[in-house]
Each structure stands twice: as C-alpha cells, then as structure tokens.
Amino acid sequence: MVLNYIWIAFFLVAFVFGAIQLLMGDATIFQKIVDSTFDTSKTAFEISLGLTGVLALWLGIMKIGERAGVVNVLARVLSPVFTKLFPDIPKNHPAMGSIFMNIASNMLGLDNAATPTGLKAMQQMQELNPKKDTATNPMIMFLVLNTSGLTIIPTTILAFRASYGAATPTDVFIPILLATTVATLAGIIITSAWQRINVFQPVLLATLMGLVAFVGLVIWGFGQMDKDTMGTVTSVAGNLILLTIIMAFILAGLFKKINVYDAFIEGAKEGFTTAVRIIPYLVAILVAVGVFRASGAMDMLIDGIAWSVKQCGINADFVGALPSAFMKPLSGSGARGLMLEAMTNYGPDSFVGRLSCIFQGSTDTTFYILAVYFGSVSIKYTRHAVACGLLADLIGVIAAVFIAYIFF
View 1 (tube, rainbow, N blue to C red):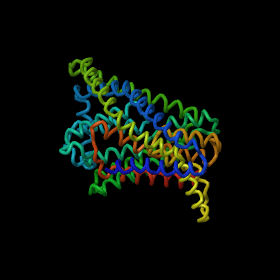
View 2 (cartoon, rainbow, N blue to C red):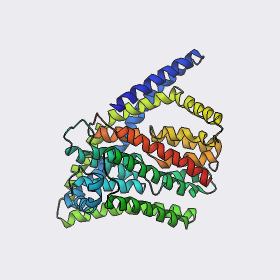
View 3 (cartoon, rainbow, N blue to C red):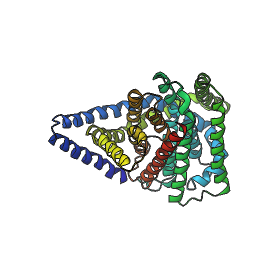
View 4 (cartoon, rainbow, N blue to C red):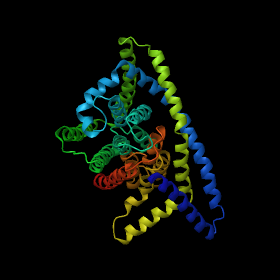
C-alpha cells in the first residue's frame, strides 16, 4: 500500500513540475518526461534480462547446496542468532542458510551472488507465509538488512575513484565502512523495535557487538595496506570466495551422491522464471523514478535544501553531494551516475566528490530491492518495510555527512 502511494506521488509531482516549467517557457519538458518513460522501461527490461543468466547460475548452485545439505548445515550453525532476529522462521529452516549466504555476499561486495541467494531466501520465507500477498516480519527484517547495504569491500566505488584520477582512491574506504555499519545497525534496531524484538538478548547483542568488532578489525587491516595491495586483496578475495562456494557445493553434492547436473538444471529453471516475474515490478518503479527526475523535481528539491541550509547559517558544502543520497534509494544506476557527475564537476578529491562516494556506499537501492524481492514472490502489501528501510537510509546519510566532515 505504501509503494502504491509513493508510485502515484512520483507521477503527480512530475506532472505538476512539468506544467510549471511549461508555463515558464520550456516547451520540451513533457517530451523529456515521456521519453524517460520509454527509456526507463527499456532499462528495466535490460536489467531483468541481465539478471537472467546470473539468477540461473546461482539458483542452480543453491539447488545443489540444498540437495547436498549444505544450506541446512548453515541454517543449524546460525540458528542461535537468526532465531532471535527472525523469530517467526522455524529453527534450522533452510531459509536461514539462504539469508546468511545473501548477507555474506553483500558484505563482501559479491553482487552476482547476493541477489540470487536473496531471492531464494524470499521464496523460502514465502512458503511459511500464511498471507501470500502480505510481507511477513522476517521478510521485512531481511529486506532492511539488504537496503541498509552493509558492504565490507566497496570494490566498484574504489575502482571508479581510481579511474577518475583520485590521488588516493581508497581514502573513502574507512568512511564508507563506518557509514554503512551505522546504517545497518540502525536498520536492525528500528525494525526490531517495530517488530518488538529485544535486541538486548545476550546472543543477539553479542552478535551485533561482534559485527562492530569485525568491522573495526577490517578497518585496521586495510589501514595497513597501500592502495595497490588493497585492490589486489579485494579482487583476489572476492573471486576466490565465489569459486570456493561453487566448488564446495559441487563437492558436497558428489559426497552425498546426488545428481549434481540435474539439481543445477532444476535450480537454473527457477532462476529464469524469477527473472521474468520481476519485470513488471522493475518497470513500475524505474519509470516512476525516471519521470520524477526528468521533470526537474529532483533538481528543485536540492536547490531548496541548499537555500534552507544557507539561511540557517550552516555549512552547505555537503549539499552538492545530496543528489547521490536522494537518488540511491530510488535507483542504483542513477545514483552511480550522479556520483560520477559529482567527481567530474567538483573533482574526485573534493569534499563533494568524496562525500558522493560515501553516500553511494553507505546504503543500498531501497525501492529497487523492494520491487525485485517482493515482486519475486508477488507481495502487494509491504507493511512497515518502506518506513524501516528509508529510516535506515536517512540515518546512513546523516552519518555519512558527519563522518565526511570528520575525515575530510
């Protein structure tokens, strides 16, 4: 229901802003808006088409892991923690293993593995859902963990900074890690409060503290490396982990004497049907975002914020990077484009250039994730998922601004 109102609001705002600009003499504004609907609908299909092969691959691998019992082993290992964070999922349910695979993939920046395992987790949670069109508490907690975007190794952002000639491409690594950790912890706390989950349970509290300690250890470890070493380590680690997962699942299947090939084919077929199923949801959200941006509403919003900040006598250096922050919950590619635009206009080593990179890495694409994940299981009523996800995003953005001022 919330997505319904937001979707309508995007079109209404775009039409109003378009009408205003038409009255001000811009005769091409509605042409731009209409063109954006065609362009973004095409983009939505291309995204889904691009996901098809990846989904087929990883859901095929996951099916081997299921048949071999690897996912169940992961579920049993994580049961003490996840049963506290996802109390409505039965103990040792396979969904626990899929959730772990997704979270671990996101933390390591393994996007190709994260989305398929996340969709698999949603399908498994949907099997437990008594109301098939309504999001359950575990689904919402899981999606908030995704939208808060905890990433230990922001490989893509560091690569873009290097390509744009940043003196030290990795100087945003620690700020991104801090900001995304704050966003993730905020998302867990907000969603737990909404769902009346006690985060002070010893096991859950120890896990959250362990997460903070692990992030601190990663910060310290990468702080000892130069930029070339860091780039090599992140690249090798990511590829090695992906290949290790594939080999471990295949070898486990051989050990259990299952037909690995048939299991892979069965899972790959699920990947294809999932990719087709999410097309309408992607088209809906990306077209709405496209018309909102093409109408000039985003630019006017940024200009209004800049004026308000200056009137309050507050340092407005951060305002130039806000387009990336506002676009990130709506469109990952759009936010990436704005980040690159900021580095082009202000310079990769400018405050705005660095802050736009921190915004890009601190949270994930909330509406895209909701559209893809909920769309894959035909969820219509999202309950408090949007509110919790956006609150986590907001806290991540605020944290990014403060951290940027501290570091730069």
